[in-house]
Length: 150
Image (tube, rainbow, N blue to C red; front, side, top):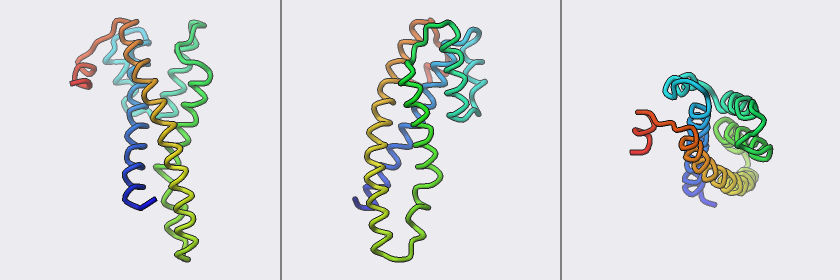
């Protein structure tokens, strides 16, 4: 894989993870009782791990979760994926002095990037559908929601 293609796929993966985090916040705000906008504002600075924990607690509180155990397991994996691609991936190869070893390591990381991007895409698609379902189910609409989809 070329460096340019790597950068493009890396950007796509980060975008997908950001959308996943945003969708989880919307799902939580829609499921939580009270004002939707206030619920959403409450999560404004929350990181992905915090959002996952809060959503899981709320989702399981009635004994009929909307997301499966497998979904939550995948969300935890996505959190780890996000952390790697945001904080570690470049450090794993840019400081290798030997050109051949650096290129070999880069290609290993590039392969992992493609695999992780595919995994995040599938969850991103699933959560968009769930977000819409939850907002309809809980009859939620907000000015933030309208702005987000215009």
